[in-house]
Image (spheres, rainbow, N blue to C red):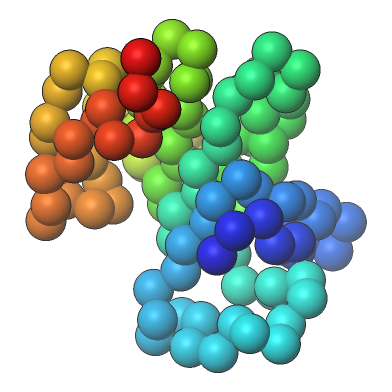
Length: 121
């Protein structure tokens, strides 16, 4: 789903750049706004104007809500950072550039060509 409001707690509603849910956890999201189910995966695309907010505030909110996987994509640096929630802390699962092809949680069953996340140079 692309840019939908997600209620993480009574007072915290966020709008991730991308978010994903396992179908069994959110089988029919089409008419829910905001979505009241914590995502299984969130991706934030960093920009100079949002980088600090995404890395600090939103990452903290996602951690506190129990989001299992967080990706931060920096299009300028052509870098993907993937984190997994372990014991209430973010643990780096992958840090890769556009030259890499690898399986990245939570999509560990496919090899992702990281360059496909960015526009051509």
